Length: 290
Image (cartoon, rainbow, N blue to C red; front, side, top):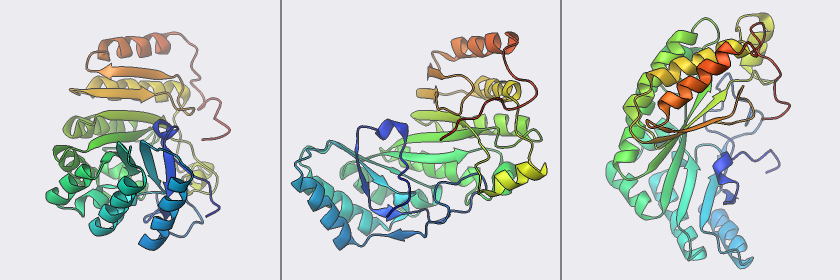
């Protein structure tokens, strides 16, 4: 497997085991992570050899992240078997985290989700991207916002932790208000423990990049991106969530504990919008890497 390895920033200190290759959907217009990578899952014998090899290296892993995209899509029996191998190979194991789609969660019963939690599965990283159904349709997302919200609520009710990612600017200029308000509404229903906001970047090789080049998708300016984020934050009614917008794609790094820091966060965004420092004509400098 020679394609780049992707993992959430929070998994920097985890042992990364690539039990899957690529993404089972791999058609989202904005995503270039697994383009050109055929999706396949390692057989359980191959996973067993991988776990045994890492265990022999004497790495007393306490945290493991299973890559690539949507390991949660595996059938329950396979995922349970892999978690069992990890518990045997790493006696000090405390948690296993994975990327998860709504359909990957929905394919398990409540009893199965609770069983996976008992086997040390801990955090599911879900890309909601937007709560606006029209934006998701345009971006060829595999699932509706309603389906992802339902799956996320079920997972958390069964004891799993949910880390949700949303993409600022995904609706473009045309749907910025719908994107902001509907995303906040979906997050309020889901109540994720962790929430990350990144700014969408039209990555070369993706459909979104081609649409942007033709003028069919109009990216937000720096000023518009911050206004959209403010609108989204203003609509959030979260009970216990750590919020981060500190990815390199963001205009300004932000971190807050919600609801405690909501007022501070809005004030910070208002100050930035009033500063005159934001580019109101273009998206501003884009990161050279993501």
